[in-house]
Each structure stands twice: as structure tokens, then as C-alpha cells.
Image (cartoon, rainbow, N blue to C red; front, side, top):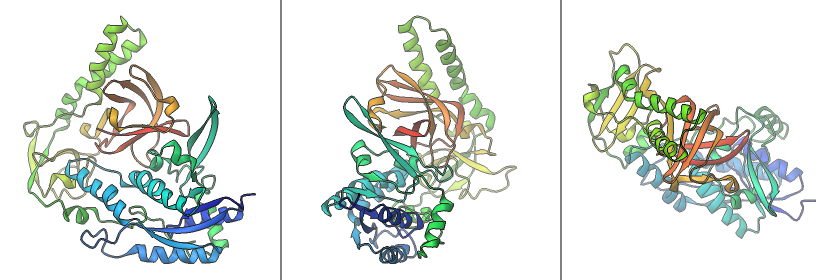
Length: 417
């Protein structure tokens, strides 16, 4: 029944996309396999070897095994402009980018989707562990992005920036399967990718050694590592703790509405703004080779010994080239009660559920892949979205994506300021 429906599958050379292609063939679709070549610029080396060559060959062998047409498409130019340049700019600004989220939004479901449509495709398919559903609302089809059935492999977070028109053209054939089932299917089919390890690198590029990568454009620059005592970090967060209590009290028994709104704005700002550390808050504990090489929560690469406990990055200042650290994994500076997303950086997959200024809602949120979902309150204001966690979150870093869910449905996302 799907014989006249053409689907272009992004074959990455891994087991997940291989089985996705097989399932589509079984379902009667007209399937075309495509490998995306996203990098061959030797002026910027992403890796010291070329895993994409092996991956491309594996993808070709899978296509031959399944009896489907196969081709390689070169997206290296848009990938450089939209992903690699973005990564350099974000790290240089002291932010922590997530290139995989951007790769899905900008490459797989934009550039690749457009190329697939030129091939006459009705849909594109990938090996993501997520699901898609739809419903009719006010005479319009609304597409829903749902978590994968395998909770340990759910990749809906990586797709949290997709738009309705992108979801409309997307298929996720393995979303209902467990990883073990996918491996079993690949083994039974004797696919070359059956036992292949999962990729840990950038999408369709390969593993990247981040420090080496960054040093190609962001030059080393010696600066201080400043150790912030735990009690100092707690004192700096005291305003946020008081703000959270005040906000809770106001919601329990709201006073005059207008006064409450003004007070709430102050409380939200206190809750969702990161502490502003300065050198006077601590002491110099060592030196580093560039604040832009570090991200909040990082432990490795500090090269500062002689401490009672391991040091963790709690903040960076790329303008003054300072890395602030705290001692121990429970240091107060590692935890935040909330975060802020500028209005321009808010994205609603479900635009029909978008909050308007003055509105609030309860959702589950995560700020990184595989992080457990946690309860939070979302407050929309004129300047943007304030996300207040029920329990403080560890390692909140500017540039990361926060995604919010209603049950297993991803409703929207935004870039953390």
C-alpha cells in the first residue's frame, strides 16, 4: 500500500539507520539510501582519521544488501557554515553549543530534506529513537514528537528544534523498538553494521577531540583558575533561594495581582540568572590555556593538583579569560534553581500550546541528552521564558538547549542564556 510513496533514508553507516531502511522496505515503501558527506575541509580537521569513509562504505553495503538505490550527497558547505562555524563562535563567546541538535534542524531536516524532495521523496527517514504522532485540531493536522519506546535510547531531545513542516515529512521507523531488537534484526539480516558500535561523534562526521578542534581557530591564552569556596557560592545564591520561597508564597496566596506580577518578575530574574563571580570571591588555584576551552561542570583538563577533592568548572568569563572552579561534585556553584531563555531563542514544536506573556505552565524538562526529566514551572514574560526547577539542576550552561515535555511529548525548546 506504500508502493507509490518514496522515502529517502539517511544511511549513516550505523545499525540504527540500517534497520530503519529495512523496515521501510518491508512496509512496501520505495526506499532510497543516502549517505551525507558533511566534512572534507582539510583546513579544519575534525578528526585525525576519516571515519566517514568507512561509514560510507558500510552504508553502501547495507543498501546493496537491502536492494535499494544508494548515493552520497555532499553537504559540507552548509555544514561548515551552519554547524562548525556556529561551534567556534559559541565556544569563543564562552557558551556550550550542542551541534547535534543544530545538525538535525539545519542539515538532516532542512538541507537533506530539500535534497530528498528534489529526488521526488515524500518523506525522509532516520534511525532516531523517537516517535511521531498526529492529531486534528481546529481543522489542522498537528504533528507530535514523542519519546522513543526505548527509554535508555530516547533521542527526542536531539530533535527538540524541529518545526511542524519538518515533522510532517519525517519518519522514525525504529521509534517503537528497543535497541536490542534493532541489533537482533540486523544480525538476522546479516547486515555489516549489526555489531558496529554506536557513533559518539558529530552527526555523520565522526568522533572529534574537542580541545584539538577548538585550538585550530581559538588560540591558547593563559589565564587564571580561581577557586570559589562553597560557602561563598551559597551566599551568592542566597537571593535566589529567598526568591524561590517568595514566589511559592505568592502562588499559594496571591496578593494584589499587579503588585504580584512586578514582584514575581524580580524573583524570576533572581532565580534564573547565574551568579556573577569575580576574582575577589576566591583565590587563584592555577592557570589554564583559554577560558573558551571549558564548560560548566567540566572536570578534566584543569590540571590543578594538590586539592582535597576534584575541581569542577562552575563558571567561565571569556572576556577576562578566567575559569572559576569549585571543589567537590556537590559544590553549590554546580547547581542552579532556574534558567532563562531569550524570547528570540524560544521554539515551540507545538505552536498551538505556546505560552503568551504573563502565562505559566508546568512541564517536565531536561537540559542534555539522557538526563532524567524533572518537574519545572515555565513563566513566559515579555523578555523571554523563565524556567524554575522543582529541584536544582547540575551543570546548567549558556548555549545548551533546554527542552520541555508533557509526558513523553516534546512540546518545545530554547537556548539557555
